[in-house]
Length: 332
Image (cartoon, rainbow, N blue to C red; front, top):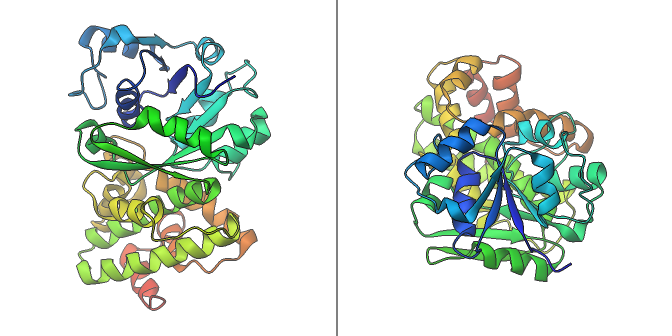
């Protein structure tokens, strides 16, 4: 089998929608799994996603929609996973099709809750997918800007460089460029951590602690990310200043499109965690990622004062300003 082959988008949110739009620039047709039949019917009728990025129109004749996850998995050679990480297991547990010979592309910027595992590790252990058939997509990219056709970059990671290049070619377009990497685990852990730090940046913004402090926070966050990735993913020749690490961190910490930043800003303004989650229209994956990385780090023992600060606020009820004041003593 020559991958990527027939590709299926798995998920119906904003990131799935933006990626589907990119794929249709280079693919004649795609498969698209969405959980709800009513959403599919509305999509076909309106010619756009009725809930996310609704100003982006599609040629629906080139899309094979289905709410039958097994039918989609059977028909596809490559599955592009683009659902929020907290719901991934719920979706995939319905699958009875053998996935071991499929190519899996993870566009999930999160970790698998309860498993505390990055997506590629989970797909290997649970579904027997070989590491050389697993691809990850990293930022810095917000779905909204990709859909608007603004200049953007994606990093495509795989241990098989030729497969990474093949997936990259399917995503490239006039306004989107791709970079190829072999640092699969590093990209995945970085994508989880930048959400955690995005929440912290939002909290600082909501508390009105100022741009000077926020800059200091993020300069410490990239070093904290590097320390953790070196232990959790091993030492490679990665450059933590590359766009998939530092760039994705910056856009998540500062952008108005960052759901994690916005979630943190609500908390900084005095909302409870529960109230902040209710205000959000989309999932802030950093909430779940914070707990997963915190639990992982109990075993790894990396010094991570920013992670500990965010965990204290989100899960231990520490007042936001108190936690940030204590954190400030550890920044340098």
